[in-house]
Structure formats: structure tokens, C-alpha cells
Image (cartoon, rainbow, N blue to C red; front, side):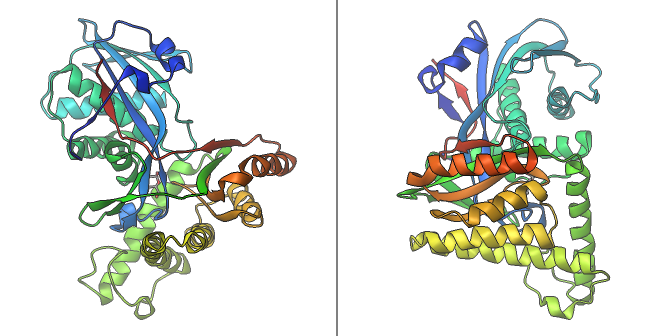
Length: 389
Ligand code: GLA
């Protein structure tokens, strides 16, 4: 079943979404945002990730329009954009450029794509580290495929999205986000080895605990450059390791780090973070098997420390949240989630303290940064799919 796209019905959509998109569409698709329990920045290093899709979706309502242009409306932004299918190029309107990149992927595979109108609306907060971008790409991919009767496997879709990011948008991302948005299943996380893309579903039952996301509501503008820099540094670290260990194919392979004379402290820190983060993923899985959520929480804290001090993708706001959350009673663990430089923290907390915690953290965060944070309790949910009445 895992290779078949989800089907969803109208009663699985919030009335507010139905009101926004209205009636009379040929195809309605949706794709969710994601969380990642642990295993950050390991995906493009052939390592382990442990994500899940969440119950926040981006919706796409499409109708063929008999032209060679796409008329795209971002309902929440009240913005319209026309995309010329005969001249797909970067315009600087990021949400529309994501769509153009995907259209180009279809064209490069030889598909003759017709013009259509598309209205989109998002429950996934933008720039939150929950990967609204993957939700956008997977949702539009699925809609275009359905509109043109193109058979598209999940792995094809993931590859097309990654190609578009690398070649069209210049974002050197891994496959964590697209994978999660496509393969997600209710109440389950997915433990994937990015070296060979093998994965298993893991049932998650946190009992009296839950996952709460806290959105720092900042996105630092070096997000993209910082991300691409890390990808490059990891490549350089790998080349230095290969001088001693030629068989090592990624920073996630086995080797003795003490044998490698890295040319800089930075490269050493990047390589050692990746090895440690992979180990934390393994330990997290074992702790989950034993229902030892205390250990899971400590591993989350360890992941944050590594992301902040060794991988250097955190920021003041995220470090503040992590430090303050740690000292709250009923919080087992907290870490920044996703690419970093802003966005959300993922927090493992006792459900009964949620309301008090929110009040307390909100006040402290506003007092310090003069920014109102946002709080999202999340449930693990089904991946991208098509509406069938
Ligand atoms: C972003 C990228 C993913 C992954 C994470 C960090 O979300 O899109 O591929 O690298 O950052 O784990």
C-alpha cells in the first residue's frame, strides 16, 4: 500500500478550506508538512532520519483552462501569478517559482502540459521549518499528474522535486521533506536510511506525552546560503576522510574520526556532528521500543546542542527556546527542527502542562525578542493525496 497515493474525502477537510477553494474543480490534491523526530542534516549525508507527516496540509484545486498558461492564485496571500508554459523561468516570487520548477520537470520528461487554473491554500505555516515548500511541490506534482493522467510513483515525484530544487531553484536540499510529505501515515513515523532509501514505519504512541511545535516566527535570511554552505562543507570533510579511508562513501559510513587530520576545525565539527546525530537516531529508536521517553528527550536535547555548537545552524531565538524549555517541568526534550536559522522547535512534553507552558514561554519569548511565537500541537498523519467524492 505504501506506494499508492492516499485518497481523501471531503469530510476529512476543514470546512474553512472547503469554503476557500469553492466548487467546480477537475482535481483537488493536498500534501502535508512534516516533522522530524530526530536525524537533522543527515539526509544529504547518507544518514538516518526519523520524520512523519503532520495533520497540516496545503491544498490545490485545479481546472484545465484551454490555454498554455497557468493561472495560480495563492488564496492566503491574495496573490495571483501567471506562468507561461512556453517560457518557464525564475521570477522571484518564490511560491510561483516552486510551481514553475515542477512544470519544467514534467516537460523535461517529455510530457505536454496543458494550461490550468490553480488555487492553493495552506495550513502549513510558511517558513516554519515544517517544510511548506515540500508540501507545495508534492501537492502540485500530484495535481498535475492527475490532471494529465500521468502515472507518477512516489519516488519519481520525490526525485522530480529534488531535481527542481537543485537545478532550477539552486537549493541543494536532501529528500527528507518530500519523502515525509509523500509516504506519511497516520500515527506513524518513518525511520529511513538515506544511503539506500530503505525505511520502516514505526507506530508512535506517546501516552500522556505529546509533541508540541513552537514557531520562533523568525527566518534568518542566510537560511539558503547557510544550508548550501553546510552541504559544501560536508563534501569537503568527506574528501578529507577519503584520503585515509577511500571506501567511505558518506559522512554516515563507519570510520575512525581520530585518524583524520581535518584541514579545519569547522570540517571536523561538521563530520563529528553527523556521526553523533546518526547514533542519536539509533538510540532514539531503541528508547522508543522500550517506551523510555526520558531517554528520547535527552537525545532531543543532545541533538539541539550539536546542531547549535557543532553544525552551527541554530540562532539566538531557537537557542533561547531550547534553553528555556529544558528547565520547564514536564518537558522531556526540545530541539530545533529542519534546516535551521529560524523556524520551529520540536518539544516532547507532558500533555497536562501544555497550556501553562504555552503561557509561560510566550511571555518570556515576547519579553526577550518582542516577537509573538506560535504553538502547534501536531498529530502524525497521512501523506499527499487526491480528493475523491
Ligand atoms: C531542510 C531540507 C531537508 C533536510 C533538513 C535538515 O528541511 O530540505 O532536506 O536537510 O533541512 O535535516
